[in-house]
Image: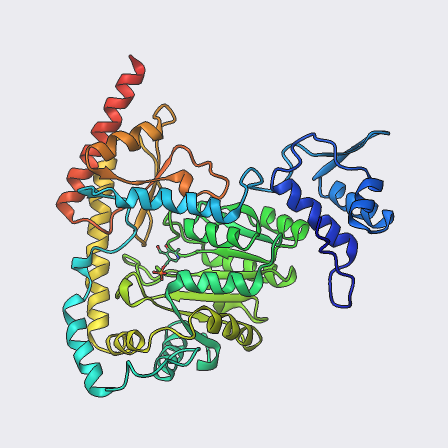
Length: 477
Ligand SMILES: Cc1ncc(COP(=O)(O)O)c(C=O)c1O
């Protein structure tokens, strides 16, 4: 075998490296539940390390309840050990499977498209963009002949700095902001910057499925944290932070995807304090902040952070132009230096043309009018879907903003059968298991009301309900 153990200054202690080595092999399924592990002597010989080193690693695994000891017999893999997803060989493969599952659903040419958490392109300001592109070329004739700086276009950084100060009182200088190619890239950059294989990462359950894939690809051990209509169980969360010392908690606390839930203001402050005490970064993904129906949501967690443990990701994709791929990461200077390095490797800067076009629209009067109209349109669409669903015994918590309803179906209904029949009849939705890092959420579905128009929403909801009724009748027979 290739030895990978290092003992130089700055590297992890040898016994921790042996611990991680054993974890990885368990995670890959090389040693199964209740299987006997090599003895201390055997492993020490194999790895050419001292027996005491292996003994210490085994003690650590025992304390973490990943292995157990049988008297005079040795160490065994603890069944149901807390190494999630160990049945999956490679995080990249699992990610591919998960992605292809969602994109398979998206690829189905459904008339009643409830699976896209995107805003109906007819509600977006397409018409103005072609004008803007022409104007941008007049103003900046060399816009395509140069790179943006890695951090982002200076003009845009300046504008966002003022915007965040006015809107959220962040008091953020432009140097603490970076423009990224969408928030999906921002999550990926943060994951590359902060997460190493086997680091513990907390993720809400359910969550935005691409985030699960990104952290998995980094080799993180994922612990799901349940999100409820009124936030998290903070006592439980504190216990998890203390016990597992997670590197970060990825969260989407405002009009959360897929549930639409919003973490209340009272929890936000405590959550930030807790993260600071436990040195756990909070990666706050906030793409729906402006998509409220009537009342503004509570201020972002970032507002409460004083020690730099909150990283704020704000996408403008959803409600301005998904195709421009413009988002921003806000963080303190120490992190920004690292982020700079990761972003240069990723793409050396978000395309300048996109940033200029976005900037032009973002600073125009049209933006505010557009957002106000959009809020009304989304509110109407949500109400239509809810009106139709009210005729069933399905359950959901009515969101105050966002793009989705997270709906619990009766457990007598098979979700696989419902999805198959619905697709046959041109209705598509997202099954909850795709949004669940532990792949449960079997009786939940995500219905997005933002993509199709009012009439299609009503007809599609009726059709979905009819299919579910037929299936229930068939199972009763
Ligand atoms: C919670 C969440 N984060 C990030 C994204 C990705 O957004 P962007 O288009 O900015 O990459 C989405 C898109 O659906 C999302 O729902």
